Image 1 (cartoon, one colour):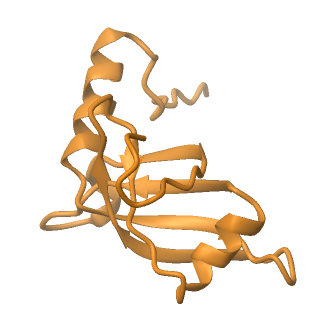
Image 2: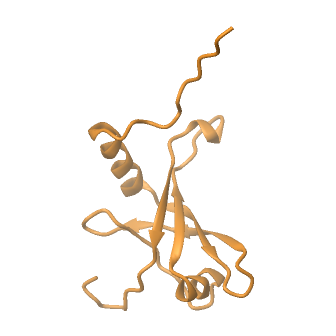
Length: 110
């Protein structure tokens, strides 16, 4: 018997890119994963998300938060965005972005 499996990863076509951009732009919260500098262990935090003019995700961080120290030590991170609704949260759209954090100073043009 041959089993047919449906691929859950969309082909990266124009429509997939549009959907991804819309999902990132509409996100208000996300899960930020960084690398804890003392141990190298993964560290995940819930963060507020916005986007800049070109659609790149922005987060406002505090120097008191563990993820800020982690990002300053190693800017590699990932950001998972997508708001669950009613029912199974895994059935709702989401996207995980592999990122390189960049510190922007207050009042800078980016």
